[in-house]
Length: 88
Image (cartoon, rainbow, N blue to C red; front, side, top):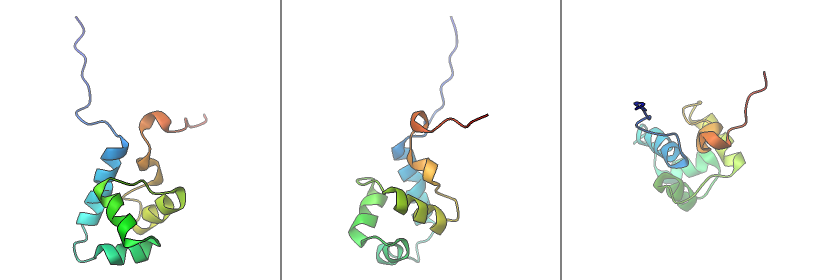
């Protein structure tokens, strides 16, 4: 019998939203309205991103990566199975 070890947490879209939530939580001095202005989206859309009820578009993903200085990367919003394979 093989003893299979599985990771305790898989990197999924909801995990990335959690990472996004972590980034937002690191900046309690900034309101959702302020974040929305920085990212170029509505406050309601930003709140939905934080709550995990919406997904950012590609352009917003890039702006989030830039605003977070790479803490939340564009690739983080996609499950591993949808990541393109790197060319060797």
